[in-house]
Amino acid sequence: MRLSIIMLFLGSGCVPMYKYQALQRELESQRYLALEGKASVYAYRQRLEMLENERETLVKEVQVYETKYQSSRNKDVQIRQLQARIQELERELKQLQGNKKAVYNKEVEKKQKSSY
Image 1 (cartoon, rainbow, N blue to C red):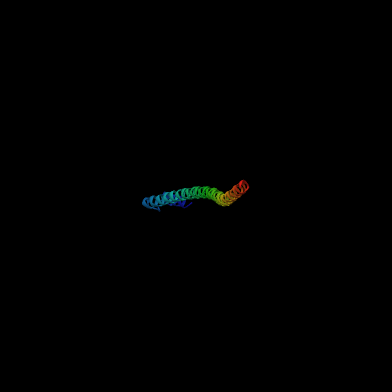
Image 2 (tube, rainbow, N blue to C red):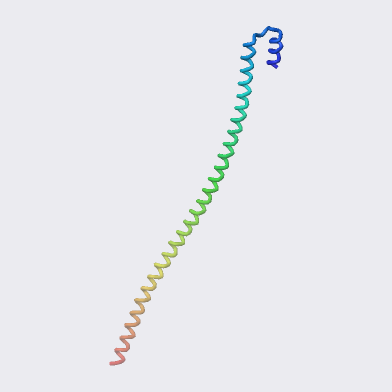
């Protein structure tokens, strides 16, 4: 509307041509800035969407690592339990081997006494 009023005055000779050209350049720069602003908003939205997707991906990755860590901790607990059971069995084995020697020695003593 502003430009049409100026055109009217320009036609009547009230507005000099250089003023008209300056206003036209200003209008073009405003259009450019408006387009640039829309483009920057679009770029901002794209960047925001990309960052949200990246964040979701990282959250999923963290969940995977937490699950792996938890399963690793569970495995560590199982390994420690198995090691404790192995040590317990080794002690029992040593005890039984000691008992076996004691029983064997008693058997030998009995045989020796019976042979006298």
